[in-house]
Length: 139
Image (cartoon, rainbow, N blue to C red; front, side, top):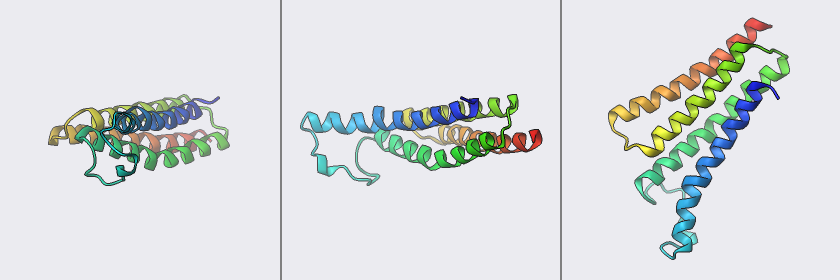
């Protein structure tokens, strides 16, 4: 398995982990203890605790960016390029995604925290662009 493919798998698993450990756990713990009904959970951003709403947004953001990263990894794999730069950037994107999500979920969103969160998102975008550039340079 190539390093970019490994990073893509990690990105996908991280997206599932956010869903399972935060959103799923919160909902099911409330349902199973009788504090909520199964039918009251909607995509409404005003449902649930503040950290839960942030987890929903972090998960949605991961879902939105996963296909973009997947397309880049697919292009790299199809090009046959094997480059330490591409490999490093793929792992960098995964790391930045994890930190971005953790900052989003665990910290109250002040201006400073939002700036830190955006910085890690922006680093992911730069990493993805860097992967494409490194791929073309290696062709």
